[in-house]
Each structure stands twice: as structure tokens, then as C-alpha cells.
Amino acid sequence: MTTGDRSAASAFDVNKVRGDFPILNQMVNGNPLVYLDNGATSQKPQSVIDAIVVYYTTTNSNVHRGVHTLSQQATDGYEGARAKIREFINASDDKEIIFTRNTTEGINLVAHSYGRQNIGAGDDIIVSNMEHHSNIVPWQMLCEETGANLLVVPIDDTGELMMEEYKKMLSPRTKLVSITHVSNALGTILPAKEIVKLAHAQGAPVLLDGAQAVPHMPVDMQELDCDFYVFSGHKLFGPTGIGILYGKAEYLETMPPFLGGGEMIKSVTFEKTIYADLPYKFEGGTPDIAGAVGLGAAIDYVNNLGFDQITAHEDELLRYGTDALSAISGVKIIGTAPHKAGILSFVMEKAHPHDIGTILDEQGIAVRTGHHCAQPVMQRFQIPATARASMAFYNTKEDIDALVKGIDRVLEVFS
Amino acid sequence: MSQQPDVQLDGLYGDLVMDHYRNPRNRTPLNDADVEAEEFNPFCGDRATLQLSLDEKGNVRDVSAVAEGCSIIQAATSMLSGLLQGKSLDEAGELGEKFRVAMKNGAEADETDLGDLLALQVVRRYPVRIKCALLPLTALEEGIKAYRSKAH
Image 1 (cartoon, rainbow over the protein chains, first blue to last red):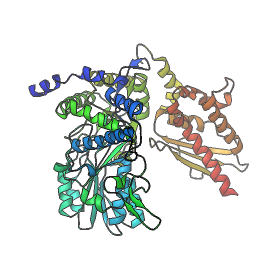
Image 2 (image 1 turned 180 degrees about the horizontal axis):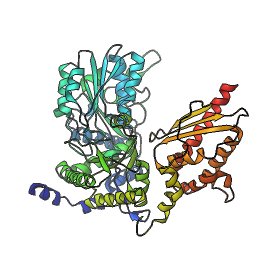
Image 3 (image 1 turned 180 degrees about the vertical axis):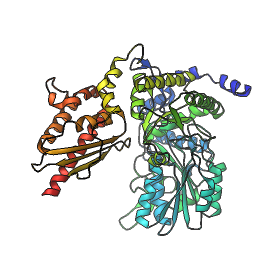
Image 4 (image 1 turned 90 degrees about the horizontal axis):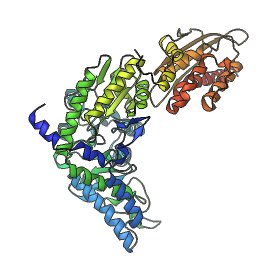
């Protein structure tokens, strides 16, 4: 550890941060909760909970409808959240920010709308071997419908994308590249900028699945230059039920709507309906207004901490955790790429991940066990499942120590 | 074992469960299976495969049971396999139903026909793991159903 690391970490008061997350302060099965399942969903700071309570207590009304005061306030809150998200990911315009339910819905929106309009028989869609099922199945469905081909970029033994193979797959037939920014099962941070540049050289747009990236690092749409970017609010310390699809306006403008209904129209007659302008064209029906407001509050919270502090703290935790788990005989870390976000997936020689999960739970330690909705990753490493400890900025070295102690207990039972 | 044994966990990972997990019975695949089924748990990818061959009376002659996954599914599969020999498919089905009910509502102490499966009662304290214990049973039920629809 360098001196710089230490000073960055010490400036960050993790105990103070933990105080902002009421759920962390509880006992589970007689032990203090050690929450290491942030890859599945993150916890919410009090400010997010309060924003939702205040919204329902004082403001609740429908957006973009009434002329009355509450409706105007609800609209301001909802559109204010959109502006915060635009700034957070450095998009050019608020109209490029579409509210969805979650990452899955964002990908499905692009598959249905952009995909059906632009991808046909004999065209190629490229994904990687480390996608979440939500970035595989919508494309398989589209391929089945259109006769397009799904090509899969392989990964190496450390969990890195094989860029040479990717380059070979790209061709004038490539109509879309849809790839994760950070692997949920392995933690690998992909070279997104390079992936985008190579696809663009072939004229293919790129969708990045940012669900596991946005909680850990700054993302900048201008720098990445991707054409679509999707993520979920609930992994970013916001509420469940709200997600974001970013799309470059030039694509979103020409894409057909996804869900028809109220909110997404300019005028309706039985002869002809004129669709609304962006972003409302893609927001049919009453949206999750409270969810958007909560996500806005989550982004305020993250901005207030700052990614300099967040990544410094998480990188240190990841190093500490990697060293600690590597030192345990009978434990193997799956996913050892040099650039990783705070995810430690592991298997044990003598215990199945389910059994690991149950024994850790008895000690109040929450990890995810299973295939993490990424079965092709498991097949790649020829394992049925892993146990996954995934970190957030409120985790501590003590959490890692508890995990190590918990694993010792697994070793005792399954010796 | 640890100095201060954890009562609950020692219950879940008790001697009988661990014995079936470490030394699973009846794992040799059958070439002449009449009843055959494979079940997956889609949440974890665990798998149980069950094969039965029947004699001329329609009773179970041989059993093969193979599971991949956690200790609970492996133990449950092994335990179930030991109870099926000599039973008619009706009896096997009834035994399975009794096991399913016992995992839901708890077993009576005198349900000795559940054999080693009674040791899995402890899993009821871990609701998310009950489906692990029931996976081989689902394979048995699906196998019998498929056999009967094929036979008729």
C-alpha cells in the first residue's frame, strides 16, 4: 500500500458513512449484520428513504398532467431527478435519459425498438461470455425472431475479455455490440472505451450494461461514446423499480416506441396517433415518480461522497479481501483480472456454495450464492456456482475479517 | 469440529446428512431404466437424476440416484434412493408425498417409513434450502408421471 492510498482512505470516514445506512445497524442470527451482497442490491441511505417519505407525505401527484400545484411539484421532482442523472453520467441532454424499471427493461427496450427496426436475417449481434442473463436472453429472442446471429466474445482464465477475438468477430454484418461494463459474477472491468471505438469503426452501435459499474466508478457518456447505457437505481443506493436507459438522441429519435399508452403521445385519434417527443416517447404510462425522486437523492448522496473516495476505499477493500481469501487453503477466487470492481467470487474445494451461504448466514454474513444469473460464466469456468462477496463503500476491513472467520467455520464443518 | 459447537448448524450438517453427502448410495447409472427423470433447480443449477428399473410385477428392482450440488440435495437424493427398492410405483409415490408433507408441516415421530429422510427435518429451519431437499422427490414424481403417460 502506498502512502497516497492510506491518506485517501483515512480521509474517508467509513463509520460515519455507515451511520447513514440504518439497515446496517442490526443483528442477524445473533451476529452484527455483515452485508456483502451489494451486487444483488445495495442498501439505502436515510436521505433516500426520507426523500421517498417526503414525496408521498407532501407532494404525491401525477406528473405532466394537472395544472394544480402538487402536480407541478411532482413534475419538478421527477424532471429534477432526470437532470441529476444526466449530469451524473455526463449525457448531453435530459431527453437522452429514459426512466425504466431496471437494467433488464432498458435492454429489452433497445432489443424491441432498435433491434426490430434495424437488425435482420444474417446480421450479427455481439455479446460476451460474461453477460448477465438479461444481456443474453433479449438478444436470443430477437435472433429467433429475425434470423440474426448471436456471437459471443470468449474470456480468458482470469475473466478478461479476449480483445483479439472480439476484433476478429467485428465485421460489416455487426449490427450491435451489447456488452457489460463490469461483470456481475467476476468483477472484471471491461475496456469499454476500446470496445466502443472498435465497434464504431465497423459502423455498429454499442450498448453497455452498467448495472455493476455505476455504484463503483464515474461513468461519462462523452468519454465512453457508447450509444446506449443501461443501469438500475437499486444497485446505486436508490430504490427498486427504477432504472435508466441512456441513448444518444440520434438513435432514440428514429426508434419506434416500446410501450404504447398515456404519457407517450402528442395526440390520439383512431385514424392516427402522434408520438410524444423524447424522452416521453419511451415512458408510456404513469412512471415510478417516487422511485425517480429516490434515485435523485441517491445520486446526491454518491456525489457528496465523491468517486475519488469511493474507489480508493473499495480498491483497498478489494486488495485486502483478495489477499485474505487467497491465503485460505481450499478457497479459490474466480475472476482474477487486473482491473476489477469490488466483487470476490469464490469456490471451495469441499463445500458447495449453497452450504457456504447457509453457514455464513448463521453468522450474520450476507453473500450471494449460485450462478448469479450468469450461467455461461459458470460453464466457462466449469463450476456449478460460486459464493460471491460484493462490496460497497460502506463495507469495512472488519467485514472482510468476518467473512474469513465465516469461511473458517465452513472449513470446520466440511473438513 | 469447533470448540463451541453451533447447535443449529451441527443440526443441519449432522452426522447422517454428512454421511450421505460424503458417501452417497446407489450412484451407479442403470442401463435398463424404466423410470427416468432429471430435475434442475433453476436458481442454482443443482441437478438430481433418478432412474428406476422395474421387475415383472412392476416393483422397483434397481435404483440409481445421482445429484450434483450442495450437501442437502446430495444427501436427500441418496436417502431417497435407499427407500425405493421393492416398492410399487404407487407406494413410491405415496412415500414421496409423505416426505413432501413432512417437509412442509413437520413429520410425526413415528413416521419411520421415511427412514433416513427424517434427518432432513432440520432443513425446515432453513426455508430457502427446502427446495434442495425436495429436488430428488420432484425427479421421482416427474419420472413416474412420464412412465405412466408413456405406458398408457
